[in-house]
Amino acid sequence: MINYKAIVFDFDGTLVDTFDIKTQAFGAMYQNYGDKIYKKVINYHIKNEGINRELKFKFWHRNYLNKTLSSKDLEALSNEFSCLVKDQIISAPFIDGAYNFLLKASKNKKLFVASSIPDSELKQLLKKKGIFNFFKKTYGYPKNKTSILKKIISDDDNLSKNNIIFIGDTKTDYLASLETKVRFIGVGDK
Image (cartoon, rainbow, N blue to C red; front, side):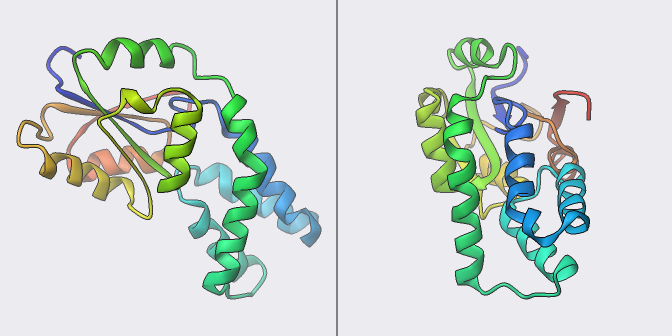
């Protein structure tokens, strides 16, 4: 890590253990559509963890329910999901070693967050978890992780793809690092 000036972190599954919380919330939101839809939703979520919830809702409604969501309906689903998970995420444990790593790395590295969580909600969660001040900048949805990495590089003359490392836990994270040629460290066993 000595050669890197900045570290970009995903949030879910990289800093905080949220996998089961979000899986259960998505399942709860679709259980009234029957077991077949419920299982499809859960399986899709598991295979597409790093994708934003609004994109998932659109996909599920279009492909599983044959419905098109209005922007108002999409916002209502997103708000419902947020209400289901927010308090649980605030009380969820950090990934082993994540907090101590942030504490140490923030002393001599520029730290960033790149997440698929809506931006304002991400900031609230980081504040409630007591880690917001570790980060130079945080980025959430509607920006995607590729555009976030590009923005971090373009906004700071001292940063380049060669001195940034991205730490994440999903295929989406890995693909963003490939596209931007930023070195990647995968967390977990996925």
